[in-house]
Every structure is written in C-alpha cells, then in structure tokens.
Length: 206
Image (tube, rainbow, N blue to C red; front, side, top):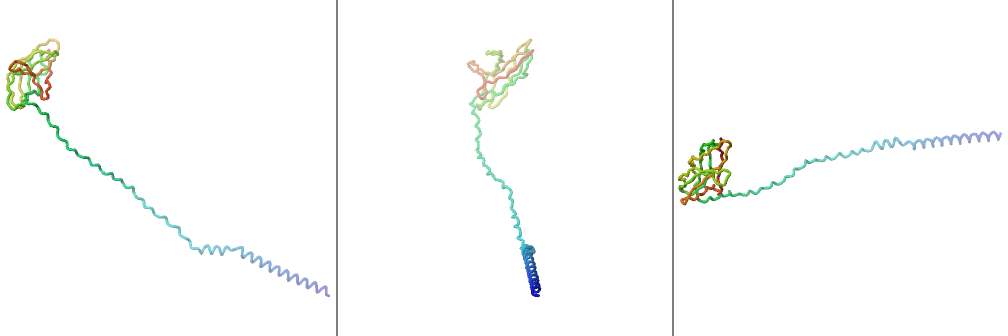
C-alpha cells in the first residue's frame, strides 16, 4: 500500500513540476517574443516625428556687367595763324606766256601772249621782246622789240609775231622766254614773282 501511495505522490509532483516548467517556458517565450518585436513602437515614434522642411534655395540676383565709361579726352584746339603771303618786291614780272599754236607749221609765225604783273603802283614802259631757244645756250631767234606801257596790276600783251622758221624733214622743238632792253641796250629777262625764269615750249613741224 505505501509503495503505491509514494508512486502516486511522485507522479503528481512530476506533473506539477512539468506544468510549472511548461508555464515558465511559455512565459519565457512570451517575454522573449514581446521584447524582440519593438517594431510597432519604433514605427509609431518615427511617424510621430515632425518632418523638418528642407531649406529653400536662396535666390541669387544676377547683375548685368556694368559698362566701364572711359572719360573722353578733350583735344586741345590750337589756333593756327595763316601763313603770311610772301612780300613781292616792287617791280614788273611775268606770270604766263601762251603760244598759239603750240605746234606751228613750217614758215608759220606763232602768236606769243605775255601776262605781266606790275606791282609798282603805276604804269611802267618797257621795250620788250621774245627770245626763241633751241637746245643751244644761245638764242635761235627773237621777235622784233616792242615798246609798251605796262599798267599797274595784271595785263596781257601780245608780242610782235613776226618770228618764223622752216623745216622740211623733222619737227623742231623750241622754248620761248620774255626779255626787255634798257636805255643802255642791256638785255634783261623778265622773271616770275618767285625770282625764277619763265619759259614755254612749242614746236615747228613740216
């Protein structure tokens, strides 16, 4: 009888111990399960946070390049005085000698017209004539001397056109110049106002 009671006590103890062990295991499993799954709490905390707005980009004002203004340089205006005209000594000059025709025919007398400039302020009388030069220092010929009164200022006078020459084969080239003869029969050449000689070329052809 006692052995049977003991066995029954042992069996009951084992059942109680087994139930306790099962309860502890279940509790342990439940506790481990509860602590190992905090996702709902984390998700709720994350969703509860207020999103911080990203800072808006600051607008940068772009300035157009400013043109550099260079100060205008002022040019100094220098007043220039007119060049004074050369003073022409008082006298009688020639300024032009025209010949018509410039290409005369053999034995044809060309016309010589001289432009005089008298700066003396009063008429002057001259015995004047035209000398004809070829390629030699000495004159080839001359017109007859003509006595004329040259008025003050500018005057055009025609020479005594009696000079002529002949040629049968080639053209001859000449230069005409204006001269005058004083009371002592000394020959002088009329000059231009700049004190140079005046000569005009022409030709005589067959």
